[in-house]
Amino acid sequence: NLWTASVLTLFPEAFPGPLGLSLAGRGLARGLWALEVLDIRDFARDKHRSVDDTPLGGGPGMVMRPDVVDAAIEAIAERPGPLVYLTPRGRLLDQALVREFAAGPGLRLLCGRYEGVDQRVLDAREVLEVSVGDFVLSGGEMAALVLLDAVVRLLPGVMGNAESAAEESFEEGLLEHPLFTRPAEWQGRKAPEVLLSGHHEKVRRWRRAQAEDVTRQRRPDIWRRYLASRESGEKDEG
Ligand code: SAM
Image 1 (cartoon, rainbow, N blue to C red):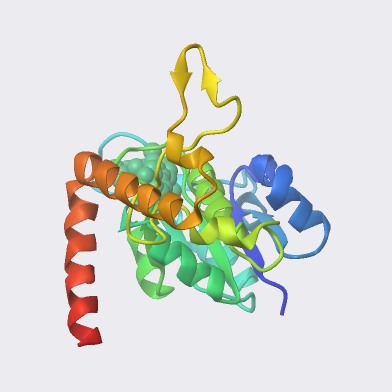
Image 2: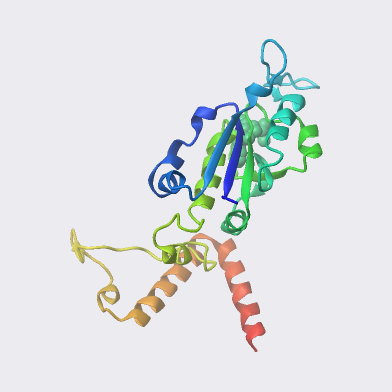
């Protein structure tokens, strides 16, 4: 029951890519999670090994064939976790969904290319569509790498310091406070005095206030959600 990512792609050489580095890479090497990559082209049946065709109804670009994609999905049918298709039309990835994926048994990821995948295979296979942002990439590979990087670092043992995950952006519904390290003064710029005080409660309160400020200024959408959840939390308490 090792947390396993099974990836379907036309560019298997894109993996593990940066997931082979640093904490994710060490976790992979130490067997804290597993990665399996299948080349969708291996499931093409005709002699040209074609995986795409022109769009019905006309228009530019190519569409990935349902029969080929379906055969690739069938090959990982027994692998753990939801089947995710990376697409700009999908549910926007956020830290809540990342946490949900990390708590599950694994993920099966379908990376699109060209204009995307024939709709019928998405309907037939009960695919969960996920987007990594409101922009268009040339393929699903980088989106899959982004998603996996965010998930894998939450798996038990992958991140050295478990506390750092709990204090990051979004974990408390806020963006992170600004960070400082030594030297205490650099090019005439002083780090905030309170961080040198050794007074943990004051530091905690300062960081919280900074996190609230930056969230209010930069992300009114997140700020409104934070206020709403704080209010309902207060109601729950009494
Ligand atoms: N024709 C599609 C559209 O207008 O929505 C865009 C296709 S894009 C050029 C090719 C592939 O890249 C998609 O099938 C998808 O797998 C992937 N992709 C592109 N942008 C993405 C995003 N923001 N999130 C997740 N996957 C994305």
